[in-house]
Image (cartoon, rainbow, N blue to C red; front, side):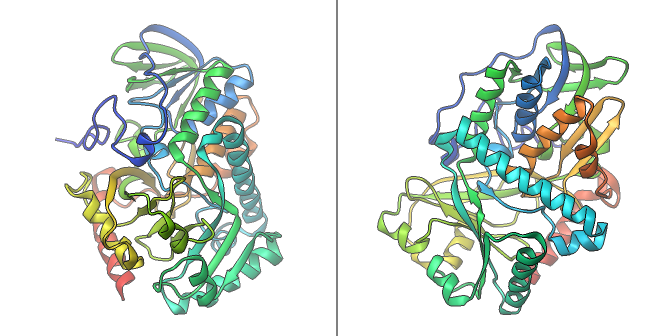
Length: 434
């Protein structure tokens, strides 16, 4: 029996027991799609991509219906680390080697727009998300620091990114009170926010612009044709265009995407409010992501908790004790938190690709997809929605620029992608410890 990723770890109609869900006011439950319906566009998925698409499409005068299988912002959009990173998921060095400098530059510019768009939408529609500037990249091995500093120079000189600076060990230690790191970088154009508050702000804005959002509306079938027919258990919707925006919670619903985008789990804990210790640990209130393949990422909440993400998992079901899974890496980084109480612990599923670049695609006719943000999706998924809106309106150049980035099928396709992931993650987790 195939595991249902939408229900394997979560209850229908309920947000996970996260700090984010406990610290923001959700929308009142929205009714499911019912009966015979029509729309210019059906958007499948109520996360950043789908909500941004709905907002921009509705602002352009299109009749948009969003179908969310659970609650708005239920998936990775409402439970991630909240880091708004600059650039694409791959470094510009890698993109230049893969695509050439002109296309790499165009992708850099798109990523810059993604951050600007996210900041603007958050300020306008989700001020309670509390965008705060500053993301530190922390090198856990001394030999990585020279490369990080060289990359800073490249971004400053070749891409005009003057908001980033190099940190030696002492400078990093002054901003992140851990002995685990040898140096790194500080990007003040990047930042962090409350991810669920941001998603809910996008949803309210989309509704205000005229988009229809239907919760508890899981898509069971999409039939392509002159008019696409999208079906749920309770509705049949005729639409000119369809956008798949399901990311890690897609499952097997659209096989062409599932062959290139694989779900993996990650886990976050929120400590009790730390009082003065919070300021001691992260004096600049910057977010941090380290250089491990099985990454540790952390930041302070608006009420002074440590929000710490880390710990690998090789099954699709969450471990019974999520707090223990993430507490171990947290205490390795911050022994000062050994006695700190964990108030919240939750897991979530994100979508990754083989090369970690997002997968944009024209699947068939007027059916589009954008997913596979590989842990770099707060800004890029927001932009993906805007680019999809442009494509539906007949201006597809920027969507196609992203779609032209190669994203290979996982070896063995959907059937073998998970066992191969397990083998790869075990190897990289071991390498992180060497």
